[in-house]
Amino acid sequence: MQAKVSFTQKVKEELCTIEFSDIALRSLLSAFVKVNGVLSFRDGKKEIILRTENAKIAKMIYKAIGRLYGVPRRFVYAKAMNFKKKLYYNIVVEEAEYVLSDLEVSMIETKIPKNIVSSDEAIATYLCGAFLSSGSCNSPKKSNYHLEIALNDENYAKWFVRLFNKYNGGEFDAKIIQRRKQFVVYLKKSAQISDFLILIGATNSALEFENVRISRDFSNIGNRLSNLDAANLAKTNKAAKSQIEDIKIIDEIIGIDSIENNKQKELMKLRLEDEDASLQELAYRLSERIDSTVSRSNINHLFRAIHVKANQYRDIYLKNHERKK
Image (cartoon, rainbow, N blue to C red; front, top):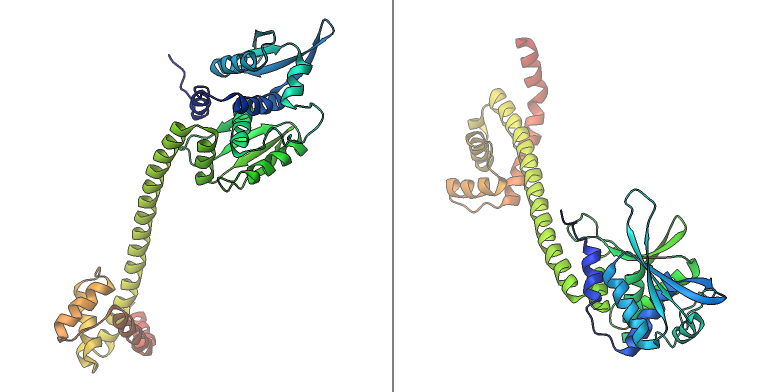
């Protein structure tokens, strides 16, 4: 049985199909190595180890390093010793000092080098590299929108948030939260997540995200309207029940036909004839009955007057019913 592909995997694999320029690749690799890279020593020489669980990302990074630097590198496969036993692809890059120097990556410094993110295109590909390294994005089918990039250093995370603000092509409200030993930079607003996907080049994923989000939002609007209709109906029924009670008090004590105000009298009769009619429907029917225009607000005013009148006789009505018991 084929494993279900997550939305995050779709995004990352789409990014792996992009033809980046050398300058863009440099920014992308700078972020990927900074976020993902681990220094190792072998035979007295420094090596960079880059880990990913996605074969397409591993292949892309492997090719990109070869294209820009031509340094020796190799794949080392490792299986995680946990319940899922995932397979990881380790890219071991030799001549680490040369590569790190050109990418302006320091394993100690937390600032993002200005030369690496000197343009909007460079910012976009730097963010792309970081997302490929440790990013994830909830499926738009889920109830909450969430895109994040997990980083290992708090100061670096703060610089990363500043990088969002530096980009001129959009407005991002990125925030940081600590989760265990990591500092997670995240976006929660659907429009910003969509803009981010477009920014890093995942346009097909952004289109899918928007299509699902819009369909889901329309469905939610429909549900909210249904709930609102139900709430309004319950409110109308409750008001009608109170109005009928007032009318019955008046009818029992003095009789509806004794009411001098013709609008009130006819409205009481209409309400007894149709307990479910809305105020607007009552306004229309009363207008026809008395051959004079009556508004919905006028109906409200008439019912308030009827309620006041009913209160004058409520005690007598209750005492009569107590005696009957």
